[in-house]
Image (cartoon, rainbow, N blue to C red; front, side, top):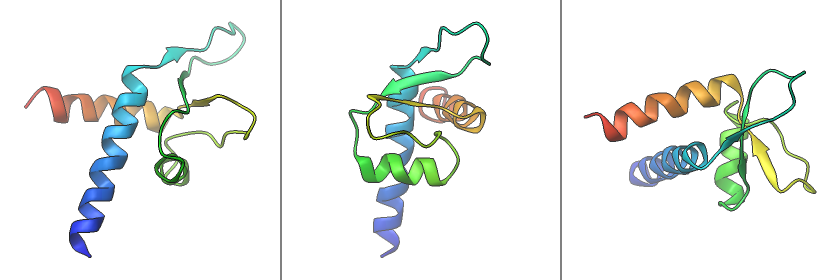
Amino acid sequence: MKDMNSKEKIMEELTLLLMYLSSWENDNPLEEKYKQSWKGYSFEVMNNLTDKGYLFPAKHSNKSVTFTKEGMDFAEELIKKYFNN
């Protein structure tokens, strides 16, 4: 079962990283700047990322999700982890 947890962790990290790399900033000048990404990933993984506080809960009708500050910070850490060994 330990291997499955490692696999799930890697899937979550890589999904968050891909979402972050393909994201865009919201363009509402009245709101704090957050990045958004399309929902084209595993809903189970995205739900886990939401439960961990990396994504804001999304409405089912939305086609995109929004990163939390914690999610953006963690994605920046993942960039260092995977690209700046």
